[in-house]
Each structure stands twice: as structure tokens, then as C-alpha cells.
Length: 264
Image (tube, rainbow, N blue to C red; front, top):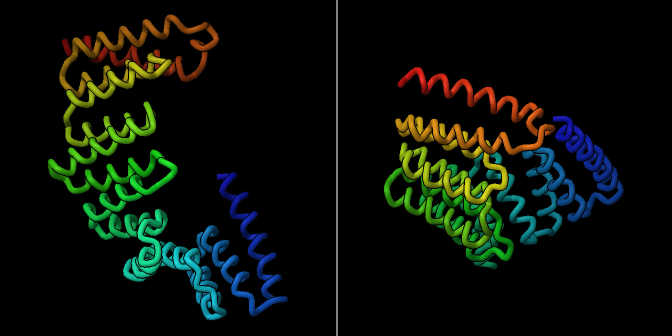
């Protein structure tokens, strides 16, 4: 929260400075556009839009301005306006990743999940920088279809992310989430075992596996996973065992063991 306050405070100072520059050069399209960007970052979207209009009147019609228009209108929930400006950019540059992302975000907000997913897939295909959030966003949009094709594509795009980017835990966590959302505990367990194979510290991962086995009504396997978790804790240096995270994990293991043994 403190960081956010500092960031917004800094933006406020930059807005004031740019406003002083505008007083000296009131016919500068560049300065109005500059302040529009600052207002957008400051989450003051109506003021950003007002400055964009002024910049436009003064002759600025750059692609960057069209993208900011689209972003502002998206934040103001004026989706048709937002898509219109994104499409203006795509008419000039059909593979412009930021414009496609704005379209994807609009489609998602409007509930057009398949169009959103396909747009995110285009972002993955056209981007020079492969970012894990693009795979995750595509996956979330596919899953929102709430049908078998959607679930399959949601998983497939994350697997593609793992293939492209390597064994990122965030992507495996997303795979597990997809399985859990379908109450497919067996698949979630398989994903968690993949996670265990790649993480260097395994005590928390085995505890998570025990929770999944409990959801799957497999108390024996849950107890075995807790035993594995304890085994890895025992291998830790004493200073690590004394950390609050590990102490809390030990307590959770004990409580879970009691619950499981009572139910037998």
C-alpha cells in the first residue's frame, strides 16, 4: 500500500509539472498527450480522456494515442468505443499485440469468451516476448466457456506455455486450478506430482498433495503425503526449521494427521 501511495504521489507531481508546461505551451499536442498518459496511470480516466481529446484537436493522431483512447474507454466501460480505437490500430497493423490485447480484454469483459481466448492466442503467436500471463489469460478465457472444449483448450494453452517457457510453477498452479474447478481431483493430483518433481523444496508441495488426496477421499495416500512432507522437513537445517513458515507447516501437518486418524 505504501508503494502505491508513493507511486501515485510521484504521478501527482509529474502531472503538476506537465500542467505547468502546458500553461507555457497551450498548443502542444505532445504535452496534452503526455498528461493524458499520466492521468491514466493515476487512474483518473475522465481527465485522461479530456486531455486525449485536446491532443487530438491539436493534431495528434498517432497509434500510441489510439491505444490510449482504447485503454481509457475500456476503463470507463465504454466497450464499443474502446474496440473501435483498437480496431483502428489493427487496420494499420493487423498484428499489433497491444491492440489485440485491448480487444481480448473487451471481449472478456463483455462475456465473449471464445473471441477473447482466440485473441489471447493471437497475442501468444505474434509476441516476440512470451509472457506467462498471456498463456494464463488465454486459459482463463477458454475455461469460462464452461464446456469440454473450453476445458481442453484451457489446459492445452498452459501446456504450450510450459513447452515455450519451461517449468514455471505459476503455469503448473494454473493447470491444477483448472482440474480443481472441474472437481477432477485425480488430475489435480497428477499435476501436483509434476510440481513435486520440479520444485527444489518439497515439504509444502507434499502437504498440498495430502490436501488433494483428502479431496479425492483417499485418506491413506493423504497420510503418506504428510509423512513425506515431514521427512523433507527433517532434512532441513535447524535455522530453517525455526522459521515461522515451517513451524506453521508442522502445526498444520499435526492437525491434519489428527483429523485423518480420527476419521479412520
